[in-house]
Image 1: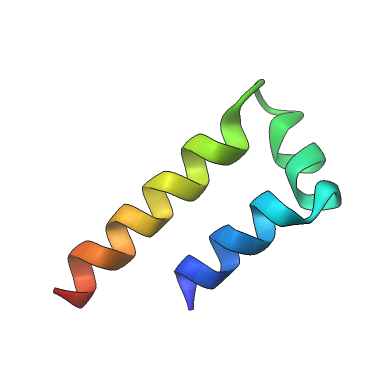
Image 2: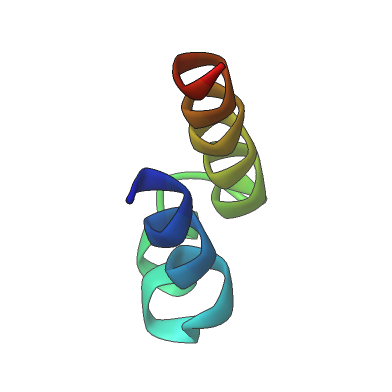
Length: 43
């Protein structure tokens, strides 16, 4: 579920714009961190 949410953050410009308002490049960083955590919890 969290990995899918990270996909949404990166593919929907509205989410990316809102997240990146807190720092340039934050969206891909946050999405990668969420995916890494999801993989860690799954395995």
